[in-house]
Amino acid sequence: GANIRLPIQEGHTPNLGHDSGEYAIRRPNTAPRNQQIINRVENLRRQLYEGLRRRIVNDEMFLETLELYHNDGHLLISLTHEEPHRGNQRVGVMFASQASMRDPVFYRYHQYIEDFYQRYLDMKLAQGIGQNTYDDLEEEDLVIRYVDVSSTLDPQGSTGEVVTGCNTFSMEATYGFDFDGNEQVFVSLSHLDHIPFNYHIGVENRGPRVHGMVRIFLAPLLNDRGRPMGFEEQRKLWIEMDKFIHVFSRGRNEITRGSAESTVAVNCRNTFRDITERITNP
Image 1 (cartoon, helix red, strand yellow):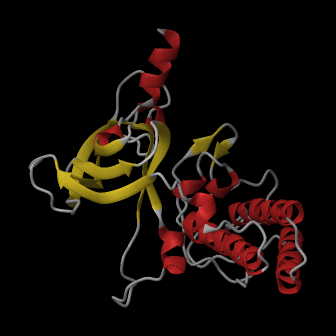
Image 2 (tube, helix red, strand yellow):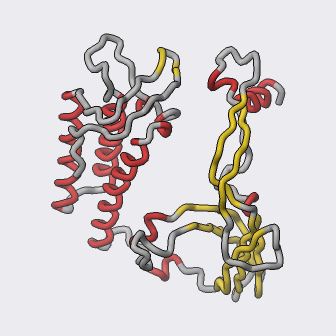
Image 3 (cartoon, rainbow, N blue to C red):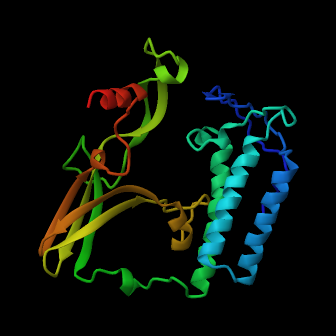
């Protein structure tokens, strides 16, 4: 497993404050120093590994231990900076759930936690616990005939491709930089974007009229070596794109769904000012 005593390669300068002051800066290659938390995290990790090795963990025990391990890891990283012995010690953004995603180490750490959970699921599958069969998941009257996507710029063209690229938008950040909020502050951000597109799904219903949940996922086909991914490797990288209820009539059903209609992806950009105005002026 990961050695939590090693220096954290990623540095982070939050430039962000909270009720008690500012979040602490972590320089690159700073090692955790809080020995009490280090010992606690290492003990929890030993319990997790031992349970997986001996295959004796149950849902409640494993998930509670993993949650403690996850939370203590956040705390340890938040205290990893250059002020380990000061009174009223500041914390890094990993301490606060609303700010922790700003820290680049957040994503590597959560992948590590996810790997633990996947090992637990693999152990359960090997033991035949909680394993669904195809028959459990199949809706035998519904048959998917095709799935395709097309750009809204060429709605008649069925390309099967989503066109992506970089875009720029201006965002109001008044409450992020000017805490008085008397004047508006705007920042310009570059981000990955895509041309709006439509999903086209053909489903044949051989039974009576039925309501069903449609879930759409994005997943890679090839790994980093350019080889086709197996399902076990691929499923861990799925990204949910949309989820919605559809009424399937008997016979042929053709679903056209715009990417902007997604109930999963956030398309609107609400600012703090927008939310405040909606609360004060409902």
